Length: 440
Ligand code: ATP
Image 1 (cartoon, rainbow, N blue to C red):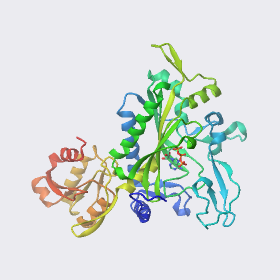
Image 2: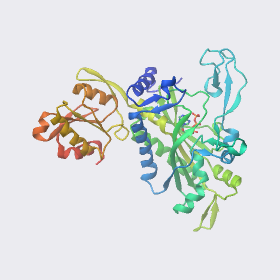
Image 3: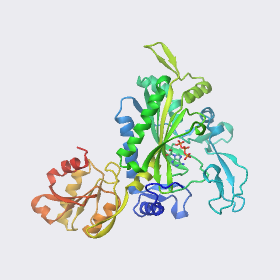
Image 4: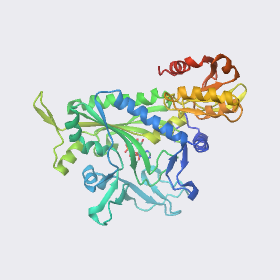
């Protein structure tokens, strides 16, 4: 596989171990031997995943006037998935190795069984990736429901509702973050490809003549989002699909790719879907999904530009990019250089000792910071070890309360990246941390 700036085969294992050891990501149902390809997000992971989603929401919804949010149902009737094309075409080609009997996705194995090296496979079969279930106590066709394999269809089926209730007009977008489910044949690489995952998708509705321009706009905007949150430029690239590789609904697609330890791979896809989705749902439901422009008297079916990202996959990329080992004060340490906005805790408050008088002022400091930042509070072990523990999970600032604090009402603020320490009055602490992190 093509080498990348972070093609360190050991990196995946290091980050996976750290994620488990420090409570970012656990194997699901581990006490029962685990459930393949499902993961639970632990005390630190849940904070970080929320931060990834929050950063996306801030950029895509909060910071704009042309995008609104949505939270649609996960369960859906077959009619939606028939119209979208998922019932018929949302399949992967499945093959079985004739020698070791392992099952693979044909387009991912380069003709050789990754398990035993055999080149003999069964004929490919189309395997539908949707999870099918029953809604209600009655079995049969009328009760069939599907878990959504993407969040996008909720935006299309609510297009008319959103138009009618928000007074938006093209160009405008509908954004959603939520769980999606795909019965992946070969889930792999930790949380890169799992059967249950979270997506962050936005459908941007535009006049057909403006579609190409907006497509290019969103490709650049989405690339910039990852850069801004700390993925280095050399670990990020854009990959435009050749016309023969496009999905049936797509007029153009560009992937934002990250240099994963196994090679370049997709973080997000930005597609110009034309009027495919709205036309399909108009025809199948009998509800016209069009826009009538009163100014021009023109009626048209908007084109859709879709930036579709994975929240859990993005979190993994942010962890990989942040992982560093360096030496400070003659001691080696592991440090996650996570962007301030993504770190599970922004601040750790550390009383130098467990003495009650120190704990009481430390609690006071903590109470002043908690309304503004996600804080950790740690009283055990030596201060050096506590700093290392915070470095390892990416906490940007440690605030140490010592015996001098009782006299001068000041604390020591230590910076994760430089390890530099400054003395700050408790009264100035909030402003100091805000200024240093650029959040003031
Ligand atoms: P692939 O070809 O890798 O299966 P895709 O191109 O079908 O993925 P999309 O349908 O475009 O993926 O989904 C948009 C985004 O959702 C992906 O870029 C990825 O970040 C995320 N995603 C898709 N499938 C999974 C999965 N099984 N596990 C985790 N994230 C996923």
